[in-house]
Length: 102
Image 1 (cartoon, rainbow, N blue to C red):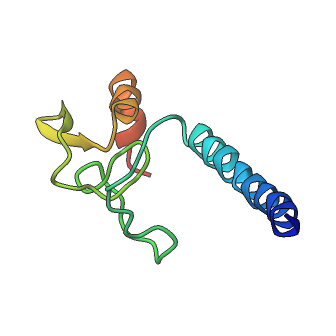
Image 2 (tube, rainbow, N blue to C red):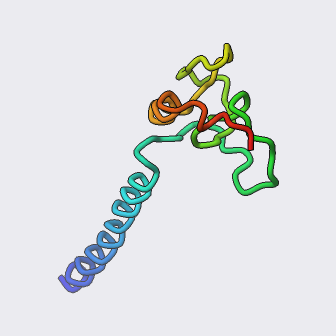
């Protein structure tokens, strides 16, 4: 009986520790503007700068282009690929904003 009385508070304390993990995950998703990059290539994040072009990257979020992406727009006779629908929607509203040379 003493073992059970000791184990119950211990199990309760351990289960409470997992509650923070869920809320953190939700906050992270909310801060990422609602689109998911699971399975996409994140090369270049935090590494030396490389040239970013709408021909080699998603022009909105600057993620390195993955040839498996299927969400596209045509701009100046070039196919522009996007990691997500929200990125495509932003680009389609004002493509010049994302293709201007800086």
